[in-house]
Image (cartoon, rainbow, N blue to C red; front, side, top):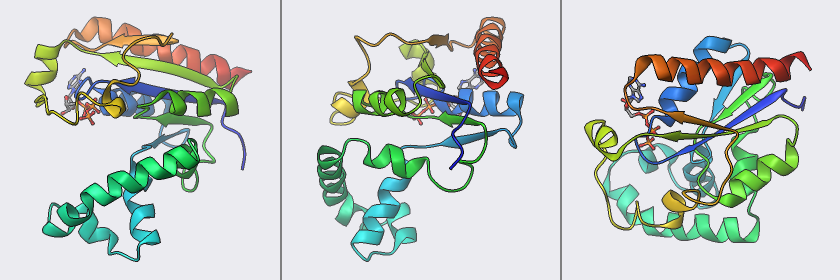
Length: 192
Ligand SMILES: Nc1ncnc2c1ncn2[C@@H]1O[C@H](COP(=O)(O)OP(=O)(O)OP(=O)(O)O)[C@@H](O)[C@H]1O
């Protein structure tokens, strides 16, 4: 595996705009230069594989998914406890990992940040995407107990020093300036 030149690690509350930022940055840099990884991506796939289940049925909103949902969450936690970098490693393998810029669109835990800091010390750029609650609500956010008040959503809310903070409150010009700043940081790493 060739090491990437830059690794952008995005974090933010639900509907703050992480996926949106990831795709804007990818468009700026070019898809051939840049790959987006989702840490939440391989969980279902790996769970299905290890339990001999039908991956496609696990992805839809059927009874099948409901039946295995709790067990899948438990299994994911167990895996992470045994090996905190398990899902980070899994998500960033395979297609696209040979591109020079990685964007990880959904860091949720301190262990996610620790993984990227310790494996890609010089390349990593941590980014917190923020948006006011009313803006997030307008984008479809609804507070859900058991989802929005647990570690996977709140683990990075305080006590982290981010390299870049992007405020994404529908202010196009400000947003643009912040994206340009981030893209410049990436380009500086590509030159080194
Ligand atoms: N600056 C922006 N301009 C226009 N639309 C935006 C902007 N930011 C976010 N959106 C839109 O708001 C919605 C939510 O954004 P997005 O999916 O990127 O959030 P997220 O943080 O990835 O959410 P989740 O955590 O639920 O996956 C999307 O439809 C997205 O296109």
